[in-house]
Length: 84
Image (cartoon, rainbow, N blue to C red; front, top):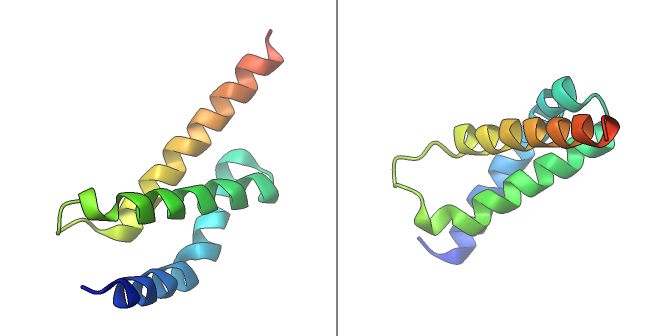
């Protein structure tokens, strides 16, 4: 697949799921701007790792897993920061 077609697929994926993923992340972190950062980072992680993923990888599921893990890491860091 050419880079241009990959980019078109990525843009389609981003446009279709970005807002949903932000709402999902907000459910964890409760602040939209933090959720937006986490979602952006998750999309970047997918794009950077796309060549290393198995061909049958479901991109939205992969990105959602990254978002969940980053939200949990954020909450854990916040909890640690507040208790130190």
